[in-house]
Image (cartoon, rainbow, N blue to C red; front, side, top):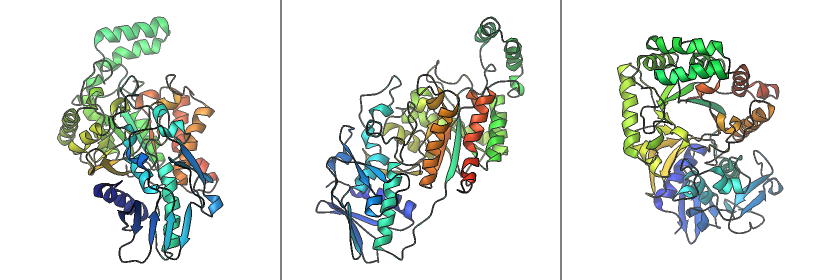
Length: 465
């Protein structure tokens, strides 16, 4: 057997969310069969692959020309098809009320969405993260393709051929933007020794008299709230841009300190942070958790920090329908971190993107229910894949594209691909990396929908982040 009953049940729930129909999946004689209870007809997947149940990245990737077989691919005519063997052609054979698909779409969906590929890996980076360059997607050139979404769209077209009167669910493209609050203030929470060092650097190294004079003022006034002169205090501006684009921002706060050098230097209980959180909530935006650096392999620590955040929010009369967030430094150990979020009672996590490359780590731009591939259990937690982090595009240690047309075009291409599959474009942009007019202009353009309006693609729908 390739699949457990729990794994097939999980995929059924994904298909229900995607298509709005209650499909039933079962494994029989080396195939997976799919039907709709109470309706005639079925779809058979007859080329199941063992590799989709293993943690490895070293196997081939084929390509299938969907358009040549009469199907409408959402992005390009040729769709990547990770596979141990060559693909039979035609790939999809239709009979009355029956379709046979000679590719393991169900196995691919399981392997990519469960992040089975990442379990037990040793080829990690300096932050113990599974890097994109180790992934099958990067090695085979499809990291910037929502491969699961593309194949499910093809499956939807097959479903409509087997059951021609069926009505499948439609989805609307959305933008979800979030901000990891690593440093809410450039100067306000530094100790005086560090602050004097920063002031000296401003004066001597950068000849920045304004920065020299601003630093002590920001420090001394912090108990009344974050200063408007603080370069990192871009919160109102971020909310203004989101509101102008009918988007709800999410701000994820650090609530612990497990690494003195890498974690934030503020406390969630500080009056200035409380005031900021009240402002965010009052304006209708979201507050979430950004677990500290050393929590990624400790579910107990994630839970403690989640409880600390909710305690402060409760004290400030901040209530939300859902609670989510993202791991600091995008640190993730599958499935330990996954279990930590679930055990903490959080509703969603939005960590799963790569730090070193943008793209579709989970093969999708749709939020979906989490599954523990070791415990073979569907969890209450939902996963909201991260498509782009600004540092990945701009920072010298990653793509180093800086601020300009190349960087903007790279991000916009990913946004277009999310739109092509009617998914969600999730963008992470830190409040502390908007210190120049050019960065602010780039950010504003990325959130706006002017480009799509010009080509008649409609407007971005409101995010329910």
